[in-house]
Image (cartoon, rainbow, N blue to C red; front, side, top):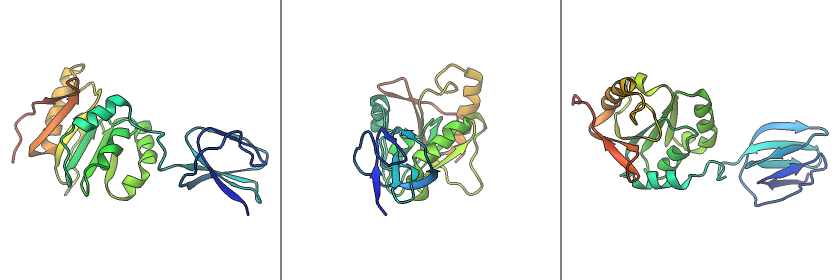
Length: 209
């Protein structure tokens, strides 16, 4: 059996010959493709079993497929993160920022929420290692409907990037969202949104201790 790890942008034929080969990567099987087929893969790894002519499309946990843009990098860098902190991200999209935060809070935790099923699916796939390690979790819910689960600890910090309920585009929804966020934070918890340099802190309604 002759297997090789390949990544990047490749066209794999049934002979297992890539048009372009890049560096090796860790892999986890997702789906086999057998027979006279081609696969054009961008940002994924491929395990080619030349004896079985079986091409396994893989997710590359270490890829930069969902790497941070300079803007998101600046936002994550500006967050006052400390080890052990519990963080809530609102409207996390693909999970790129949440994944970066998970790598900066030590044995803490980040929960990413988003109303979009597509975003939650992307985040789940892109941060599988962090989720499996208990450093990150994702939940499909709108911020104005968000409440803590039974026995779920409050969060020390929340942040949001380009969320209409928190940047002034939807004031009525924003008032509901701020109430929900306040209830989910510790008494000293803080909320940051984009629009500052690069962040600004939002005031929260009174919170019961």
